[in-house]
Each structure stands twice: as C-alpha cells, then as structure tokens.
Image 1 (cartoon, rainbow, N blue to C red):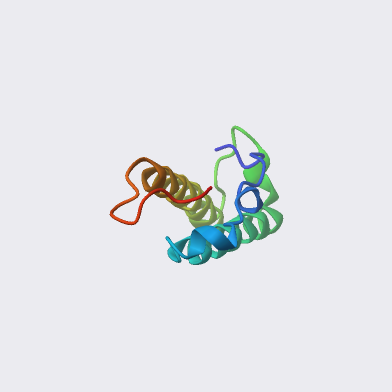
Image 2 (cartoon, helix red, strand yellow):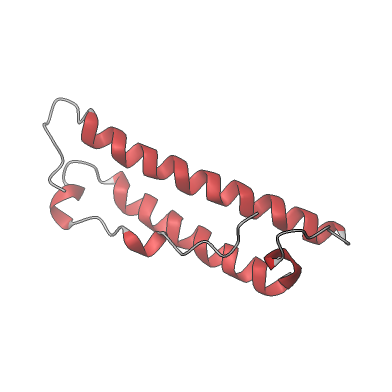
Length: 97
C-alpha cells in the first residue's frame, strides 16, 4: 500500500460557476477532504503502515489498512465522476471548468 501518496483532495475545489450545473461537486470535494484527513489520521495512529512490507500485528492495523485502500478507491471513483461530467454533461451543456 502506498500511504505516501500526496493528498489529492485539496487539488479540486469546484468553481462557484460549476456548482450551478453540478451542485454535487461541493459535497464530493468535502468527502474527498474528509477521506484524506482520515487517511492521515490512520497512518499517524498506525505508523507501521508506512512500510512497504508491513505485516499487520493487530486487528486494528489490518482494518486501518483496509480503510485506507477503500478511501483511495473512493477518491478515484469521485475523480472518474468529475471526468464523466465533462465528457457527458447532460442536457444543460458543458460544466465550465
């Protein structure tokens, strides 16, 4: 697991003009930020997750690892959603971002 990956949540703040076309982008940006904070807190609580060859010694470390993997996956899905909005914007036209 690569827990050293740079934060991505702060990289996307939806412009106000785009929220008129896709207001869900605001909630998704907030969710991404929460997932990044959660990931950082889990790594701080379980520093052994920083090792590329860690073997969980306790159940909480294993679950923390799973949470991080799922959070990274959800962040990826959110990114794909934003791309889908640009590629297939619907009847109101393209989103201005």
